[in-house]
Image 1 (cartoon, protein in one colour):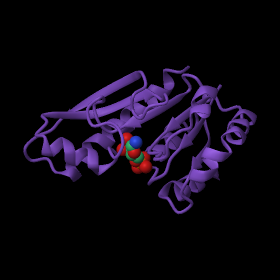
Image 2 (cartoon, rainbow, N blue to C red):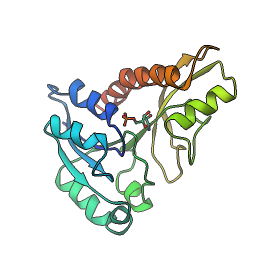
Image 3 (cartoon, rainbow, N blue to C red):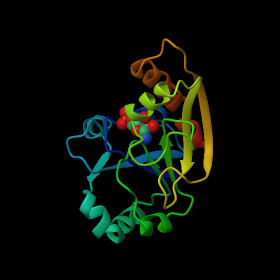
Image 4 (spheres, rainbow, N blue to C red):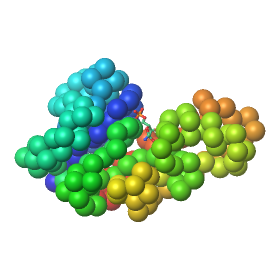
Length: 187
Ligand code: GRF
């Protein structure tokens, strides 16, 4: 059995997609959600799906890393999915879960990765540079932002008619289709 903890700071639409996708799965359980923002959309979505939500502030993540690791171990968490989690994961945390933390990023890394490259900033940069394709990357997390080993990438076309909004919609669809599959690879 794989017990998953989702870390999210935003709307949580990817998290919700996972709650639904794995709702009746006997091998993969989305067990709990960690967020740093108590008013983020993810909190309401998680509660709707009856998931435990733990609020961990930026300070707590840095100063009580050990306790968070303990908590996840007690909960038997063996896979951590960062789905729009905006805080940097401390070194100690990464070392505690080797090859067990994955992140989803809305570009074809190494392009459009790194600090400040999240959400619509990514799509805007892709459009500004007249890219003909974009996509998503699901990768392992190491100590550097968006630089861990790639698990999978999926692409979409970018046309002259695309706007930030239409590109964001294409990318979301790729994320919804591929993140559950990437998690299933851990079975
Ligand atoms: C996704 O686009 C993901 O690629 C990025 O953050 C976004 C989260 O969106 N890391 P949501 O909170 O799942 O709606």
